Amino acid sequence: MNFLLIPVKNLSFANERLSSVLSQEDRTALAYEMLKDVFEAASKAKLPDKIAVVTLDKKAMQMAVELGFAVIDEEQQESESSSVDYALKVCGEMGAESVLVIPGDAPLITAEDIDFVISKVKDYPHVIMVPAADKLGTNAILRKPPEVITSMFGHDSFRKHKAQADEKNIPHESYEVPNIALDIDEPADIEQLRTLGRHTRAYRELIRLGLIKEEIEKTG
Image (tube, rainbow, N blue to C red; front, side):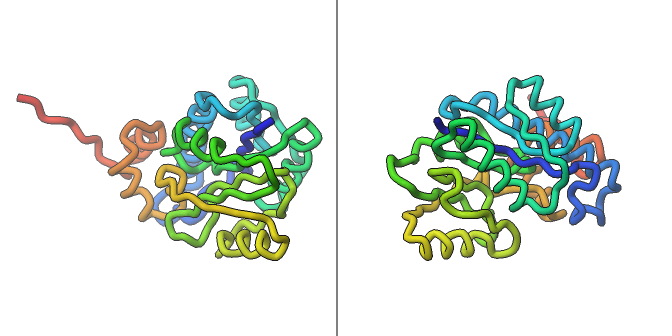
């Protein structure tokens, strides 16, 4: 079975790197809208046999339950890596043969992007990665089996994941998927969303928050 896993941190403290342009209340509101975009894409994907969310955020749990996703409840969150590794173990116990992890703050992700990565699953142990736009982070990673390598999210994680796979002689490959590569972490990312994400809930939320001016198409 191919699982899709979405880790969600406590969104009451979301997007600290946007603090120069948004209050904490507004950053949290934006985080939930981005998560709704990702959840919608996940719900429309055809290839995941099961979708799971690992979090201790109660609102994110409720959103997941309403969509029929499995919820992996955490008692505490130490780091994204520890949360994902805990969830990978649980997914394996639930019957997952492979697990694709995607971020909850990449609102451009589509069902087709998710299906594209899962379609690359092989019959043998391996790792598939999608780098972040800066080519340093790892914005999506598929592992078969789920615990074939551990998580090393954070600065330079893309290189670290590849190095770990090499050390363990695990085949790996990477694909550039622009919609997955763009997560909204920095004020500069908002310009990318303004250009590419007019169809998203996150875009509409940024209009409401005043960071994007609504563009009215001229006719006639």
